[in-house]
Length: 481
Image (cartoon, rainbow, N blue to C red; front, side, top):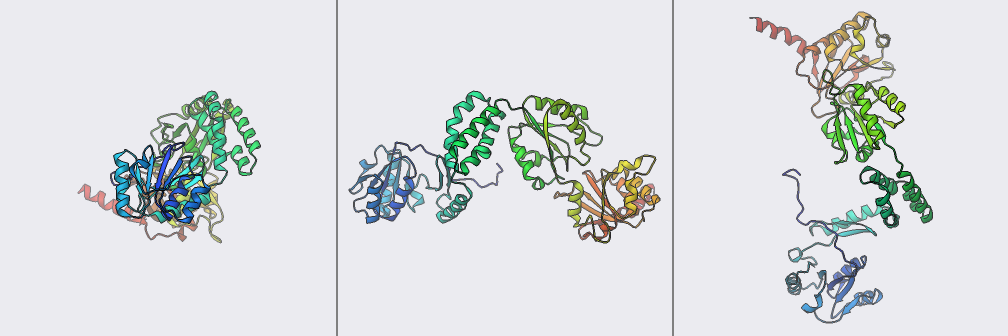
């Protein structure tokens, strides 16, 4: 927790009340409200009131609460686990609070926060599931508003579902080992077929579905999800990716995946960095394949986090083939690829009616060979080209495309750290592109977009590439002097 994070002055807990006495002292509406609230529990309720209002008296009789029809006296709270002072008389509430504290009994005085040991929450009741909302007495109306919103979100079937879960608890603990197998069972129990059956009002089907789920869970094998981590910003992660991260036993991630994205996984998940950055591979692809297979065969749920989209220059094909050959189940979860994030940073239309109707995803290293790749002809005919990992070969990319016939004044957009607050944007033409190679200050991943559609981007917050190209000779000349 950071030093400037807000801290609670009242710590929320759930106190056991079954079969234990709770005392409410008061004659009117406030006492009635507290009595109604406490009636949602299995506590033994004692109401102390010498002159109850007709509504309070009627409620006491209808709900079989203990009624002490007498003025308040200290012996009336003996043996209680909680006391509520709701008399509306400050001096009397103060006296009740002092007596309760002297007896070691937590006390709540209605509308008198300074006399309270605890505060009464607004409750969403799906017994045995309960959600308590508190404001430390600062805003009871706000707590009620939040309670109403949560109440609308939660199905009434959650209570019966929790009750059904309790009947399977012993069997699950006996048959399923601690950790991921047991956690996966309960996750599927509360979100899968048993929950859907109870939502439909079919208790028998819910029990049958839970029984079948438990049987399947005893033979559960591992599973690997190849997940796109997106271009860097954690809020661009898909909902499916986030769900899988929260269910993962192990997270295997590349160097370009930010810590903030990895941190979205379960805190007790095993975290395994595998490098895979240009010039710095902590593990070979074969070693990564073997690691995924070992984790899957050991029964673990694995998330293989890849920067961007796993199917775009992520070598997912090799990993899928290895998992298939080993008989380990897997799935692929798409992510936002860097080209789309770069385009969004520039408000750049990757396709533009009447200008560009096709796209090419490539790496600059495709142009290192002796022949021009087939996609180059698409670039010349007007396609938008997104170049991944192209900074170190920017000069070669530009030269080869210009030699092939692409005009040197074709628009170019460059983004370092696309989607992140640290992003830097540059714009220029194909003739300016070689200046990227001398930019030692560009340490993050660089995405280059080339094509006529780029001219429609918003360059308001970007820096001209030509500025660096023009400054470099002057700096060099000054050094020689």
